[in-house]
Image (cartoon, rainbow, N blue to C red; front, top):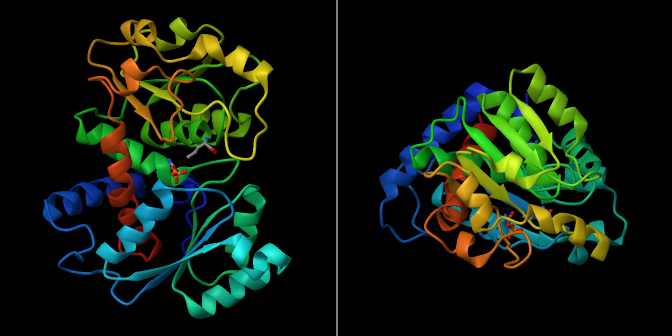
Length: 308
Ligand code: CP
Ligand code: NVA
């Protein structure tokens, strides 16, 4: 059975924990090696990862490329605009062709249904590198970052401030799988996807939505922000105005626990969703979080090939 990673639930909580442990071990084992040097065991030697980008990317693109190299394999990176996919070739046909030529496919696109269609027609693993609905790979790196900084996940209080977007949906999904809680501070009309919330709550996570940012941030162990305008969304002054009370600034961080940490998947917009004093301050883990994308992608790839 081909393993696809379209959402965190495709792996489940136990596999997610194992992926994070694997990432920690492999990260430790490499120490200060050059980034392009393969791990000693090269567990995906000779494997080719195809990457399709229908949206911009810096971290996902580079981290998957480096990840497959460190695992001993190689990658082909394509922007859909330069593919026949961009001229109307179907997702299904693209899936069938790439399955004959490559060993796995990572795709970043808009409509989540496209990733599902790709997976339904592929005979090799398909990985969701971000859709309008979710961003599961990011959250593996986020959990790895928290654990690496001594934050045990069960019972952790995570405060999300801002737009109820793809990244938040995957955080909420992770909460159900790893048993932590999420306090969401967002304006009315910008709540996360209700199906993710319901599933996490059914799994025992406390997920609450607050219209007051300070209430959401109170006693949090982790404060998370993301852009107020995701890729593909129109910039609207009304939305920016509605979001402004949910900006992560020093007042918000003072409401969180004294040892609270700050996460942001990047790219960031200083002065909008976060102030420089926070993202560039001592509580911020954003650079570890970005680096951890590499280590997380390696575990995701190894899981997809049944090695975890
Ligand atoms: N966080 C993240 O996915 O970054 P990119 O858009 O640069 O890939
Ligand atoms: N929510 C953001 C995440 C970028 C990595 C977006 O979809 O643009």
